[in-house]
Amino acid sequence: MHSSAVFLIEFGCLILGLGLLGRLAGRFSFSPIPLYLLAGLAFGEGGLLPLVASEDFVAIGAEIGVILLLLMLGLEYTATDLVSNLKTHYPAGVVDAVLNALPGAVLALLLGWGPAAAVVLAGVTWVSSSGVIAKVLGELGRLGNRETPAILSILVLEDLSMAVYLPIVTALLAGVGLAAGAVTLAIALGVATLVLVLAVRYGRHVSRFVSSDDPEKLLLVVLGVTLVVAGLAQQLQVSAAVGAFLVGIALSGEVAEGATSLLAPLRDLFAAVFFVFFGLHTDPASIPPVLLPALALAAVTTATKIATGHWAARRAGIGPKGRWRAGGTLVARGEFSIVIAGLAVTAGIEPSLGPLATAYVLILVLLGPLTARYTEPVATALTGRLRRRNATSRGRTAPDPRGAHETIDDQDIVGRT
Image (tube, rainbow, N blue to C red):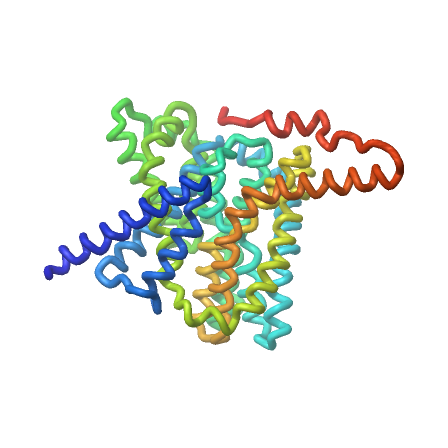
């Protein structure tokens, strides 16, 4: 059979299968992300029926999926929102780095993998998956919730931190000298700062350039600008996701609203491809030997991420329910963790690091949508039960666990200005 025909059949079956899995998840009011990942495992390396003809296209589609997810997340907020939130929430970024990077570094040292592996595994456990979280926030209808700016600020701080972290890790793994590493870091920081300044100061000019009354032209220009900026950012060792996000926040008003409606179907398509691609490159046979340490690490860093989100939302004045929602939403790890682990695998510093990182990310990328949905109701129920028990033991009626601020927390939302 002709190669193009094989590609069309194979890729068509993949998309059809994703659509059916999405329907199944929708019937049970469940996020389809875990099903997409399991589909990737089934049809990837060591799976039931590995994909061959469409593998390269799926890889490109996965990159576009992450870019579109971050672009759409950026479109929800203005540049003013971003600067204000970063100024307000930068202490949360510090807490996030300490609480979530430390467990990975400690485990690597306990396993005897050495300092380089410790730095790598610290990054794997530190950074949440912006792609998964953006998808989950959209599916749960929480993009306008009061706690979402706190979540977004932590994600942005993590992504921007990667502009510093990735050059350091690359230099560490390559064994380059201090001077060469410093130059790489300076370039990455300069590019990230330049893109951020342009987005904040000249966003209205970008919107004017992109604006069009013709939906087709608007779609093409927005998508083209986003891919160019993402590609340039990645070429200069800054995350493509950061570049796409900053394009999103640079657009405002009617342009942002129009782009959101036009890009939503494309985002859903390529985001699904991204999650499948993640599973495709995981050999199921490599997971069992490292499953126990991966589970232990996942348990610890689930707790630390929930604590991070809870603390950040509380500091922002969010009510108790919003604090738990923020913590549960941040649990998923994904694209950056795999990129970081891939650098270590390529450098050959520790054979077991790759499978451990893969198992760890798979656990949390499956668990993340569940914690995003259920952390708040479970925590509210447990808190209410504890209050009633304490009140009963003191011989009086427990106060209503819902306060006035709690009602505001449920109802008040923030939108794009």
